[in-house]
Length: 117
Image 1: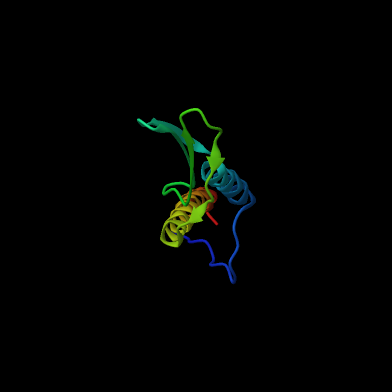
Image 2 (image 1 turned 135 degrees about the vertical axis):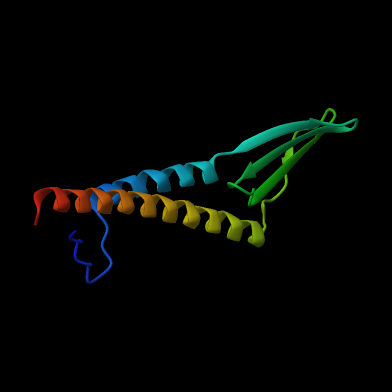
């Protein structure tokens, strides 16, 4: 049984790069999509907006007292949650890269075995 030669430097297949671009686009979309909720209280209405996935990194609240216009609060970044979002994105991209490259390597090894070279 012959094996494929090892590559001298870090390389990925073009199809893996394309799949990684789609995965990165999905992660960016999930992090920039606004997730809103409205909470009614006795004294007014809270409109809550969260940005970030899997943990909401930016959190914005707008309070509207009964009978007055809304005034927005500032966004407050939470750096630990930002690190969690970054770590989750890297983990997802690594898993996608690993699975795609493993699939390519297995196909290449099978073709070498079938050709008898």
